[in-house]
Image (cartoon, rainbow, N blue to C red; front, side, top):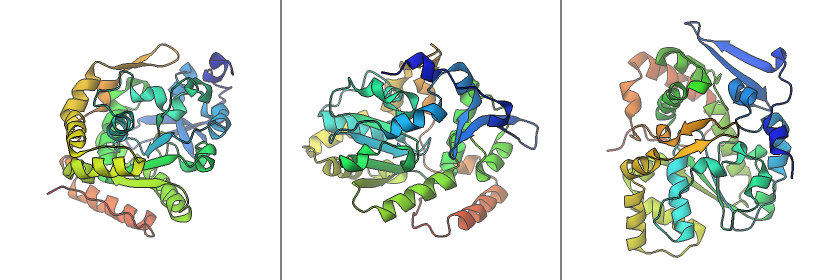
Length: 316
């Protein structure tokens, strides 16, 4: 096994490796860009997670098992929610996972750290498909792709960025939205990420994908949970689905995660409860001005003109 400290300690970061964008108010966002991803500079400096520049090949070469499940989503699209539902379905229990989902987030660890986890393993990731283990296809692992309307994603990601001090962005909503639309934000721009995934799913019908929408799961959790169970080919009945829906309601799931903490390799702890804010569909209306919504729609039409994805921006 590779020395965790050696890999979690970032390779040399030269000034030319750092991308800095300054918003209209003078607030700066800093990250190291590698193969289309934007890793927060501070994460690299303190060795909170592996340096992606060194870890990408390890992730791609990670041994997979036929029973592995991968929850794939852009940040703030419902990853925690679907991960917990999926874990309950494959484990046949309504007990919450004691550990946080970050313990099985592919990009937060070295692949060797997952070897001792008993099957079935339920991973989660915000990575594009091209950075995921090649073994997913060979082992025919099941993949669940969860999406959320991008206006609510933008609002939630803004609050996430503000809540976690280590990201060091102090701009307000108006200025952050411009960064979001220009895809100058942490991890990867939403438009690029979503377009890449749509192409992968369109061009690879042999891969076992389930596509979900956050809004559908909000509106009809029983049907959507049953859909996940059917996709996973696990045994379930209406009573079990109803119990999962109750345990995984936003309120209950948020309460269950309030006491959880995740410790990065440098011993810095994060409050997992901060990952949960409102969970509402349509909260974007409390943030966007009419002009901002129209600007967003224009950018969306230009960047996603060939997309077949359809989003709900409110739930009746």
